[in-house]
Image 1 (cartoon, rainbow over the protein chains, first blue to last red):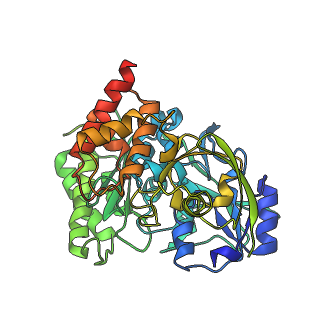
Image 2 (cartoon, rainbow over the protein chains, first blue to last red):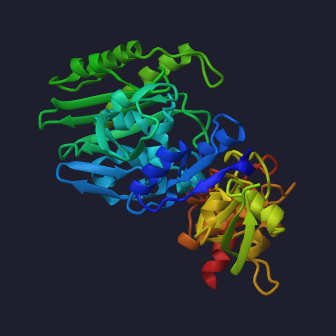
Image 3 (cartoon, rainbow over the protein chains, first blue to last red):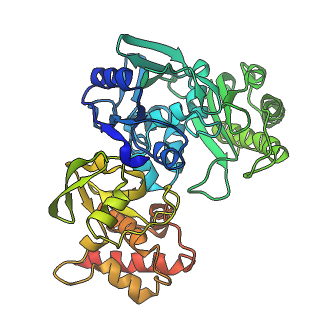
Length: 285
Length: 158
């Protein structure tokens, strides 16, 4: 099958969109998901459209109040980004945990988003950031919230002739802390059993100005925990309050039993990771 | 069969290969260029046995398409020795007993070579981190970390 494939290597986003429309081909960038899928015959396409030579789509930059990450930014470039280090350190934590260095050198954030795995590690942090995705086709572009983009395991709102070009989110206010924690069988080369992204901004009196909690691998898509966020908002952060919120986040998930862990283990894991995350960000432990 | 001409630099030499663009770099190296040092392990980016350097960065050759390396530079395990002398990493892997069945060794050495290029004096933690994507089922890794440490000491002295 692989030997009948054609490979197109567009040099601009417009050219890529045109080829996609004409051929209905399969888009590939880092290849860390697409090549195993191809080998297993999990998609049918006569044409692969390689985005890896598109210029400027791998940059990480500020645009006004927003941070914009090009879809082709790989995990290594995220891990080394000074801008993200200063504003959203949890994205560096995630990038350093994906696969091994070989994966980090090839895999892209755009690929992780489009692949829409329930356990996709960049997704909980991006949901916590209220990220939006920019989708292009040969006629123009549209921007939609990531929370609308993700629709189910491997299912997204991307139309057949659309390409993901950018991921953007508002820069968190100065002083916002964030962390990404996960449970896996080892530190490297694992798929998360449970993951949690937490963000916290406290005022001088330890009162919560802003809090966001997102979970991965505990539902068909990564999810936010609005009830727990509402409970915490405006309150003074204490260990007792964190315990109560962590307990509440368990109800947000609907985990399943699978080869990596049981639903019961995942429910317990949610509570543990949310508690750990908030204690760490609040400086309580 | 649909093929394309792929021009690349392998171990410092310009090579030109006619190959299907959907073939992986792993098989381009092994089948078309007769470089059998890069090992065919899991074929899905889990084991690291096929690690090579692509423009200086370690990647799994099983997860790169031949068509994606046109115009780029690849270094394999065969490209590390110079003038018939083993690279210090190769020598110290042998001396430390870091090789048992040997299947993972080329990948481990390529990941280690990339590490020492960027960080000539790594800590043990940094060595462990650099080798996270290379699985070895024989050695238990201890001798591997020792070998990299010894090679770093030697490279740093030179």
